Image 1: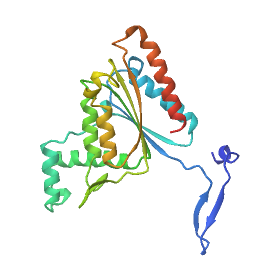
Image 2: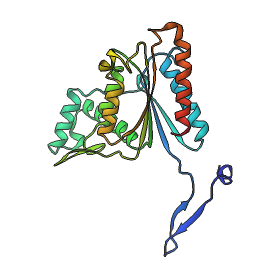
Image 3: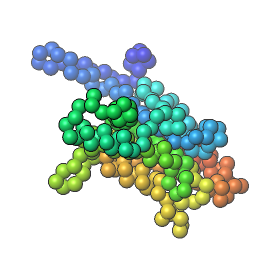
Image 4: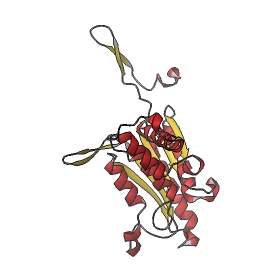
Length: 240
């Protein structure tokens, strides 16, 4: 693998005064991208998933060294914050050990911790959703609840909350049957705006959106709308 990139980058190995290895200057660092989808449809039946796949393929071509993790929220366990989770968190805050939790509390809190840590471990994020009732599927909201964890992705200070995941970037790809990016319906678009607010809250402010909209409102233009979205997704992917 190293031979594949040696002609593209100049590498300089750096040591400290004690001859201890510090870093390889000039190398292209491998990034970790988390590709998160919340759509129960098959990819070929979904505008958002089709555009998302085009983005991912273009990204892979541009960044073959990066690690990509695909997380399908409809095919994985995403715990809701329910009585078990709240009771378990309360017990831990009171000083009880994890072993003292009930089996249900242990299982759900452990899974939330896994999802939080997986999110923290990534450098880049791609969210792919359809618009449902002005927002996105409940699975995405449940997932967001697992990544907004005080002390891990944000912290409270005397001056308010501070996001801890700075220096990262995200893309949101969303399909909508109508037009919600402009006009009177713009005020009821709560999917992309909400996601941007959440990401900003935890420190991720470099966020781009690829919106595929109007296919139901203008069915005769559906294919051209999709083609334009595919081009935009691929263009963003090349510099993401």
